[in-house]
Length: 205
Image 1 (cartoon, helix red, strand yellow):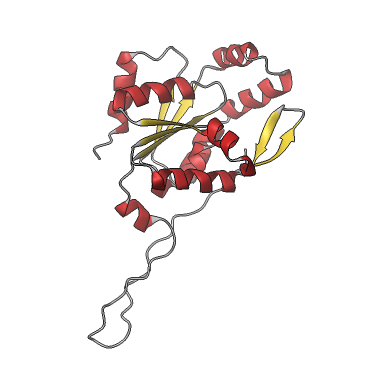
Image 2 (cartoon, one colour; image 1 turned 90 degrees about the horizontal axis):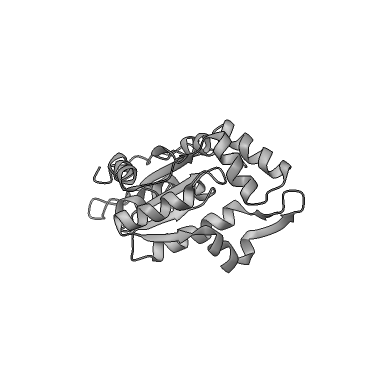
């Protein structure tokens, strides 16, 4: 996964323009802070290594919170321009993350519902548009079994296990300024632990 880290920019100081009768103008840098203050749609992105339990957890959160589920894989199918190639060795599509994020931001801005966005790329959405970033993790032995069940090649299994070992998604999410909540999805998600996750999200904050 590509690593990108952008430091949050602060607002510029208030600058008065024109004579005293004119309204003062506040000039802000384009860091998304204005959008965060006025947006009505709340967003949880659920990320993590492949087969870490993202989709299961995301769907349970949707049921618990009564929010709308966003499957990024379907978004990628709908917007072919985000696909820039195909990796034959890994047998997967190569995604232009910047283009994908642009599409997802459009989905967020147009949505009348609060959203749970499910993808190992969802943490690349700017933190100013996301209320919480849930990072799923999984026991390595269980993850390997899940990947084998999907019929992945040894190379693909190895790469995904390595991503989990080094907490790639968690590190990237933190570098990008997200409020991260880590959840171990090694075991089956049930009512008790989904209630616990909902409490940890602290969405009233």
